[in-house]
Amino acid sequence: MIDATHSAARRSWIASANGHADFPIQNLPLGVFAPPRGSARGGTAIGDEIFDLAAALELGLFEGLAARAAGWISTLKRREVWKRRRSSRPK
Image 1: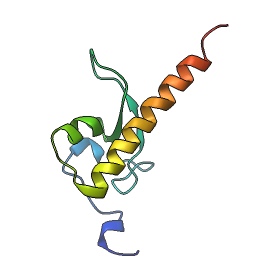
Image 2 (image 1 turned 135 degrees about the vertical axis):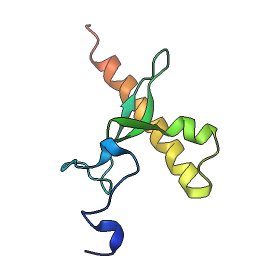
Image 3 (image 1 turned 180 degrees about the vertical axis):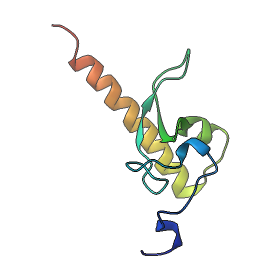
């Protein structure tokens, strides 16, 4: 173990995030989701919840490099969705 943050015993304040062998709190998956009546956007799954990166950016929860990274990930994931949608259309 590198330090305490890598401990398998660490717990999240989001109850549904605890006990996931594939995605412990040290390994949160990035992905694309679409909220009801919303467009595709980047987020990370934390248990049964999704942390919306675009909403967090709009609220000013990130600063500096973290803000740039969250914006880049959100934009990248949105582009991937549209690219897949275009390539899967019948020709």
